[in-house]
Amino acid sequence: RAGRPRRRRATMPRAAHQSFGVVSTALNDTTGFAAPLVSHLRRIRDLDAKSTAVVDGVKRKVEERLEATRSGEGDPSCKRTRASGDASSSGASAPSANEREVRDACTDALALADEKVALAQAAYDLIDAHVTRLDRDLRTFDQALLEREAAEAAAA
View: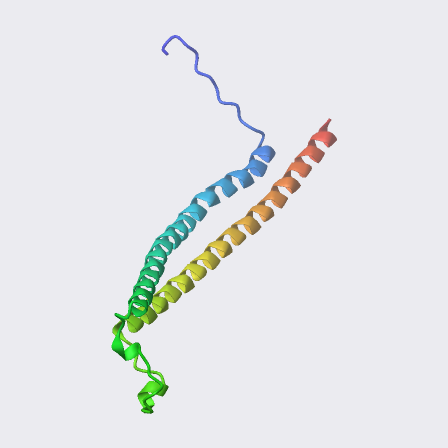
């Protein structure tokens, strides 16, 4: 290195530098945009995994209950005989522990789905705002480029 001359970095004319500053600004905005978006997407992925586990658990419990009922091993409170005229046999009986678990799991799955929808909407809004800002910056850049070209044409 000692024997080589230092290369001088080419500088852009001031007007061109200002117009390309729009590009630099847009690129810098991208770094601030990515972190929240990645955070939203990771949270959606985590919620999706939880939701899938909850739904799979519900399916398993329902299948177990159906098999138990088919084989006659089900909860005796679920067997309703119409022959006896008591009120509990003709109306809805109190839900079993399995039914309560299934209902609670379904409620949990719905809450997870609602949170995923809210995060997806927030991610969409974030992307939409960023695209709007990029469109505005592109119009500014195009205008600066046209002014620069007009100035060069007038100077020539």
